[in-house]
Length: 288
Image 1 (cartoon, one colour):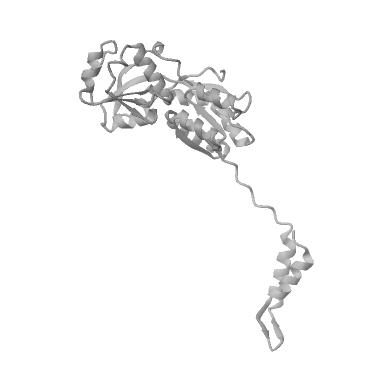
Image 2: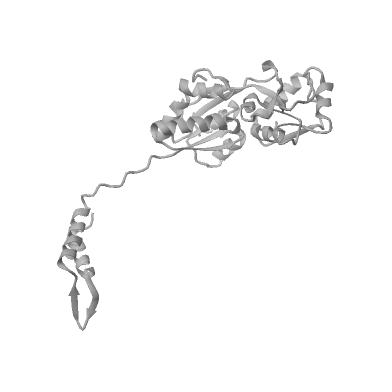
C-alpha cells in the first residue's frame, strides 16, 4: 500500500486542469477533487484480484490422446482446473524431461523410460502407478483388403503388394518395440526386411493407413476407436510381445496441487471406464 501522504501530494499536483498559467493554477470542481481523494484512501481496502488456478502439464504417449482429452474435459468441468498436454512417443518425451523440459505428470507406454527417469531422480518418489494396458493390431482400411494369416508370411506379403508395412520406429518407440518383438516371435521379421516403413509414434501409423499411404500397419488396438474407416486385419497374440502397460508418475518437484488432483483422478474408477471405452485394457488398479 502506498503512503497516504505521498499519494495525496501526487493527486494535488494532478487534479488541476490546464497546468500553470502565469504562475496560477485552476482547480477542478470540488466534487471531482473529493471523489479522487476518496478513491485513493479506499484503495488499500480493495480485495486482491482472484488468482487463476494453476494449469497442469501432462507429457503423455501419443496413443492416449483420445481418452486423456475426454478425462481433461471432465476434470475441468468438475474442478475448474485446466489441463494441458504434450503428446509424442514416450521416448521423445522422456528425453525432453532429461534435457530440462518442465512438466507435472508423465504417462508412458513403456516402463523402461520411466525406469530411466526414476533412476536419474526426475520422478516423485513412490508416485509410479500402472494405469492401463493395450493390445497390438494389424490395421487396414475398413473398405476391405486381402485376408492375412499371421503364421503364413505369404498372405501378409501378398496383402502388402508393392507397399511397405508401417510400424512405429522400433529403435526407441514403445509400440514399435512391441511390434518387432511380435514379428520376431511369429517368424515374420526376417521375411519383411526391406518391406518396412517406420513412423514417429503409434498415432502416426494410424494416420498413414487411414490416408491410404499404406495398406497395413501395426499399432495399438485402441487406435481403431479413433478412426472409424479402419479395422483389424488381425490382433497380434498377447504372448508374442512384452505386456503393454502404461505407467503414470509425478515429475519433480511435484509441488502443483492441481497436478496432484489430476493424478488422483486418472487413478479413479471413472478414468478406468473412459480408457476402456477407448479400447484400452484394464490396468492393475494403480499398482506397479
